[in-house]
Image 1: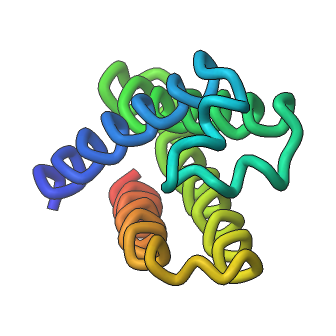
Image 2: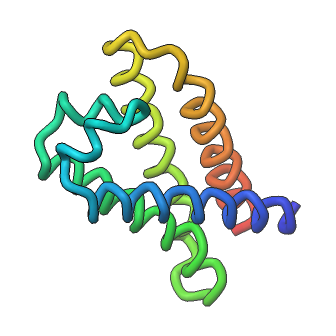
Length: 123
């Protein structure tokens, strides 16, 4: 189980780190031009950057506390934060009538939930 948790945590951390850094570093206008990021038109630049920062912190939280043994309780809490981000993404995409992206959001939510439950159970 621990190996599966590490693999899923690593995959999620890479995805959220990349997505979060893109939101932090890319101007809102450029993000809006990406077909998969049309949702940003509903949010301010600050909100988009806030989401990006939360994703980066979540990615760090999935790995660092558990790997270092320093406050490992933060790992499942970070995973729950990413579940919340995905729940918000699902709601946003449903509201915008963008069902084509929902499978990705649902898979990411379920993987983060797997890490949260697994780390709470083993911690």
